[in-house]
Image (cartoon, rainbow, N blue to C red; front, side):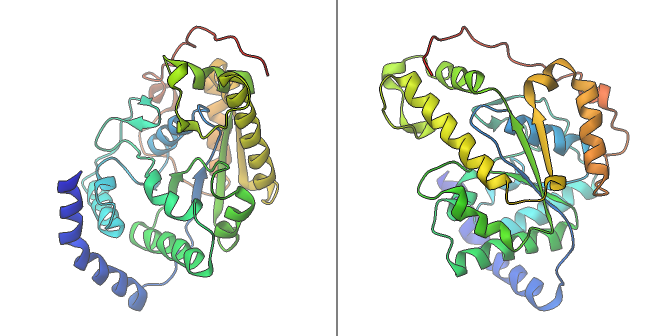
Length: 291
């Protein structure tokens, strides 16, 4: 990690030059911003992989994510990849939101936390919008990103302020699962429940399972409030359990949704072929809990 940090520091002067160039000579692009949000263990990373495979979108991948202090240089790197027609052929696999592969999407969570876990001041809101505008100026493609915005230091009620100024550009993808499946997945991620850490930011309220269940419900309530502030036509709800059973039919609905916004599919990409490598993990043994 230290070597990447040093590498970023060495490149940072170039990053500043790019920012000034964009400020002086580039105009704001009318490209869409695609935000993927969801509860823990609700397939959000998988949907980053599916959308980035099927559609012509820009996103932070595991290579450009190494330029965490120089995101615009990272975007130029993405543009070079596209010029040489290097496309992500996802394996649709991840562990706790971490994918493997040079061009697989990266959550880039540390970066988004700079905004969503901080009070949305005018300067923060302005920087958020400016960063997204600059990313769009470089790529000229819809920008896809994910952040699991959960009740933490801040709430979605406050985080909405970050998106208010880009409402006309924003498209939201919201995959969801039944609460019991989400809780069970979380509990199964820890083999030793006695050492269940604050990874999921739950508060001890009775048993571990009850504590996690209450946190999961609180997140769903926050999401419901957040989504109610946007036009329903801009939100794609994905029932993950339904998708697992009828993936072809559900994906056809999804492609129809993106077609409304003229977001193109990648050439020579066929839905059935893309789903060949898509294998769902079997639910690990159920853990008893009371909700």
